[in-house]
Image 1 (cartoon, rainbow, N blue to C red):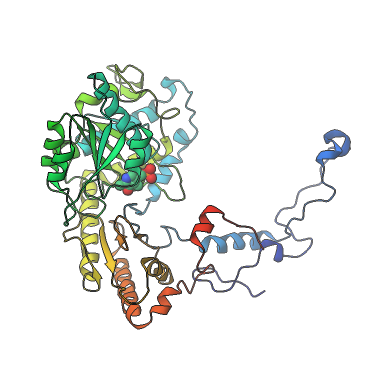
Image 2 (cartoon, rainbow, N blue to C red):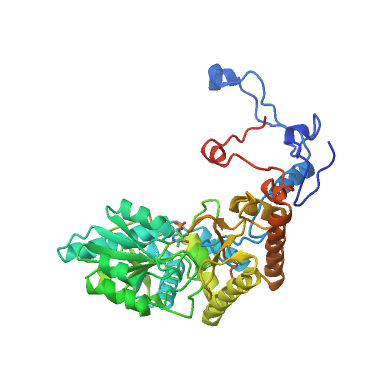
Length: 489
Ligand SMILES: *Cc1c(COP(=O)(O)O)cnc(C)c1O
């Protein structure tokens, strides 16, 4: 076997650990035991013992390290490649967050410890809660929900409890047609039916359709603003008025606050409930289904319904948990939430400060609009600029047989992670650069997209058969996700 190179892209296959090394080699030398051997068959039972020792690879420590390092270099990651993954806010995760979360005073805590022994983490959680209240312009925030979808569920449970407290059982929830898939799913989980409100051609809510649909049976409108087609709906205050006039609540899906930080506060534009995704906006790592956190903020009239326990500051200045809440919906998660993730979010907010947060949103918006301006002559832009933190474009592929999936695969050859595809409108790509990419990276990405646009016209087959530089080429996507076969041979 030739010695494999480290780094992307890799053409040749990697040997397995079993194929490396030689008999007798090993990564560890274990001293002979000075405890007398016992008869394993008698002590454990013959039926539990294999006849042969397992066939373990025999490689030296350095070969072992290199093997796994090579494998890790075959993966895309935010640390290795640009991820323009729309709606996911895949920004850089600053290392200071990790350092903070790994401090023994945080990392070694146990949720059953006495309040008096854990004042530090309680103060941190209380401060984070207060910061999020400030950022959102809402009266109170709970840190409990585990992620965005869990935050949505918590928010809708709060809204339902509020209506019930007024003797009403409102069963309908409105969502614009550009809503994230989790919004209608949340409605179903909470026993509410989701009805779709139309959007205008410019991506804003069709107010006439909203007026026609909102009624005394409407629990809430769940809206994302800036929405998933990348535009900020300036009618939001008017939307809030229309919804409130029928006694319904305005829910903001605030998963991506990357365009609003320090610029606009949802509480000020009429939002009653919102969730945050700390793992998007506040730079806590995500992807691969890893832990996130979905704090929920509510306006004053919904405070009695928040989950318990809530972290509080007592009159004597100490911190603690409170279960006192008149109409609480109860607990939505074991213990107190994803504390490790929340520490990272707090470290992020405090390390950049309020000026830094404003700068994040300004740069994120600038980066998205810059890329859109560089690409607009070769890709169709179905919604007019200006954009917020992301935008939608549709490749010009008529008569070539090239699809948005082919383009995404071809982008991998250029060293970029594919963007979100085919959502929220057919055949589109959804690009979200975030504030953390340099101008050089944004330009390299734009150059790659333009090169692919040329290729679609001149050599569509090259695009259709991409990627060409990856160890794994085209997969049967459905089978790969439904029945993954990750065995060797
Ligand atoms: C990511 C996202 C969600 C879901 O958040 P999870 O943490 O993945 O549950 C909801 N709404 C929008 C707009 C999102 O981008």
